[in-house]
Amino acid sequence: MRGAPAGLPFRFDADTISKGLNFTLDTDLGPLDFLGEVASGIRFEQLLPDAIQLKVFGVSCLCLGLKRLIQIKLLAGRRKDLEAVAELEVLLEESEQHPPNSE
Image 1 (cartoon, rainbow, N blue to C red):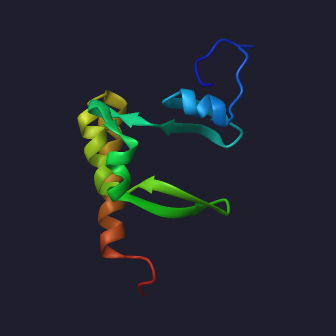
Image 2 (tube, rainbow, N blue to C red):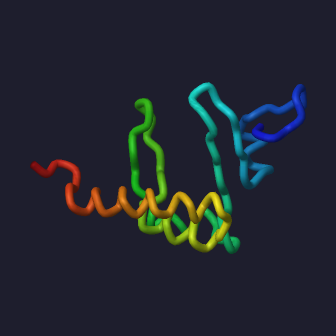
């Protein structure tokens, strides 16, 4: 767990996930956040209509679409979120100009 004291016992399994809400982890590939709730108390279920399915390292994952991610980061209002918005807006603009499978 990111930010937890070294040596703190932690098992990331179905039981732990069912009893928790948000998990921020450090992995061999970098930081990874599993969020059951985001800014302003918006819950996972409310975000499903804005989710897109992606394959990440061969595994199917639901990820928040860029438009909704930008909205969530603006709602959070933290400096690090607001700093990310400009980059996300560029990615969104590029994705709209060059959708997948376009030549």
